Amino acid sequence: MPLRNLPSVDALLQSAAVLIETYGRPLVVQAIRATLNTLREQIQAGAEVPQNQAILAFAADRLAGWTKPTLEPVINATGVILHTNLGRAPLSQAAIAAMQMVSQGYSNLEYDLATGKRGSRLLHAEALLQQLTGAEAAVIVNNCASAVLLTLSALASRKSVILARSQLVEIGGGFRIPDVMKQSGAKLVEIGTTNKMRLEDYEQALLGFSTPATQPILMRVHRSNFKLTGFTSEPEPAEIAGLAHRQGTLLIDDLGSGTLIDVTPYGLSYEPTVQASLAAGADILLFSGDKLLGGPQAGIILGRAELLGKIKRHPLARALRADKLCLAALNATLLHYLKDEAVREIPIWRMISQTSENLRDRAEAWQREIGCGEVVSAESTVGGGSLPGESLPTFVLSLAVQSPDAFLARLRGLAVPVVARAADGRVLLDPRTVLPGQDGQLVQALKFLLL
Ligand SMILES: *Cc1c(COP(=O)(O)O)cnc(C)c1O
Image (cartoon, rainbow, N blue to C red; front, side, top):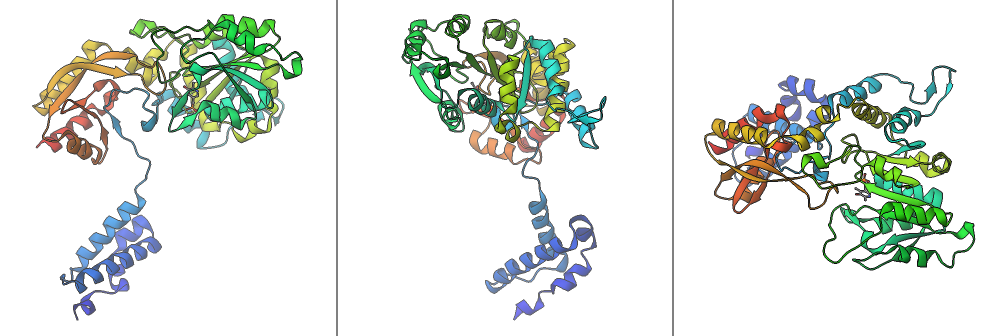
């Protein structure tokens, strides 16, 4: 019986010092047992008994698989800048350094160093946001969906919230703004038609609520990921805010992406900045930290101090609060705006502002080094529920391969996976979203696959 020729676990452990050093003894024992079980089945089916070193190599493969982080870096060659599935905004060096600084030891997260008493974690980002936007107050939560949930829970629970039909957005991953709203206890009142919204629609909906206690709240939601074109109209935010204030109620504006700088110089169509939206009269603004702001995942709530006070005191504020890593990275990101260096220091703004010549140079350099493919013009997108339908002209390296899908799968299978896209039977690699420091790695990987 060849099974008897299989070494024992103990015998194999004798030569497994390096594995034990790397992975710890209990896990190595488990891997060896699992390997021997598999081998027993194979030997019963007629396979040879392998050498001890070969058995240990199988166990080492298993150990590497078991301990490989499931969350790992990838190279984004898709040209989608805020790729939600790829983690949205890469952080600036300063943001990364700030996270490291507050996480390797203690910090004054909620400690007032002047008085030696408990402080507030919200102070850290609030002052910068006040300075940058002119808002009276700010609250930072886990993400923009949390910001919607918390704001409506604190201000609109058991009240009606008036929202245009054309703004009932599904954000992505099946999550719908109306569903998040319902969780807050707010009652959604849909107004207008799919394509047309008039100020009178808001006025009509406000009739019949006479007492301030039952007064509905007006809400706007950014059409993050789709464009409404054709026979359409909508009142300006300032008109809606004006109406809300005349009726003694509020306008909550979910900007989704929320940019602090004007996007038009980069060839993108006008998108109101956070500052402009505040100036238009919204009482509360909500936006993400990791969309056009280019910072960590966060939800930013800005607005009037009295309203933000209610939001800060709501029990959900504790449940949804941002952690110290987020606050550190957010502050460092906001500082870039204050110092007027956002476009230089924040990766997504560097990507957005890259010139066509620069992109062509990079794609051509890849082509020269790999020795194949063509450099052709194409489009990058901002993505991540920002600027729907907008694109930025780019140059991509286009590779003619036998099966684009199979080649994309091989790219994803690399030690540092590369995510790219296929179009018209070719694989396209867009330099815009590949960090400059990753060019060498990408070229090496392509050379290896194209051998
Ligand atoms: C993206 C988006 C959200 C959700 O933001 P997260 O930060 O991903 O939670 C909410 N509302 C709008 C309009 C959005 O575009």
